[in-house]
Image 1 (cartoon, rainbow, N blue to C red):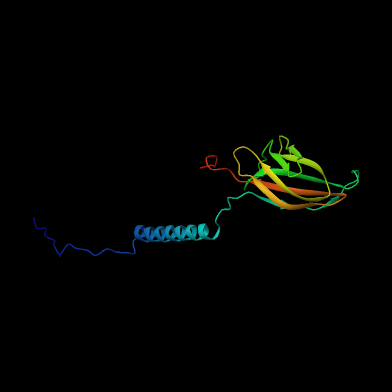
Image 2 (cartoon, rainbow, N blue to C red; image 1 turned 90 degrees about the vertical axis):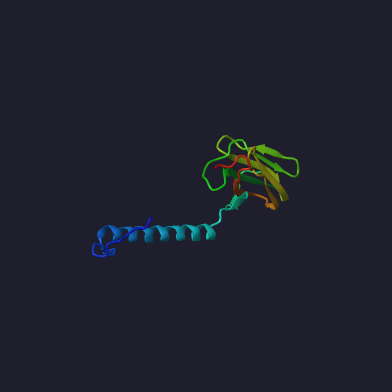
Length: 153
């Protein structure tokens, strides 16, 4: 089947009609947004490992001689949501469980310790060679990453 085009009624597309100009602008904007999203995802790769931030040391008013205090909070990584009842284990055998707001406090003899923070559904965090100084309160903010199978989709 042959199609016949009547050249007398053929009109070329006019790219200056308002609808086509609008479509061109929308396609251009969508292209730029897609490129920006790709670039952003390459530059800002999400950290998925547990971590901690060491806070300011402060002086303890009442404390046993030769001891210091370790205080902190346990949160979900990249969120300001507390992880209740997380465990804080010190290599010397001391263990404490965070409260329902993720807060913990532990009095330790001066020295250097390996400290493990853990909770069901989250990756453990091991802080190596953490030094407790006499008469000082040491604050840490701990962020635990979700374990595989427990991650949000």
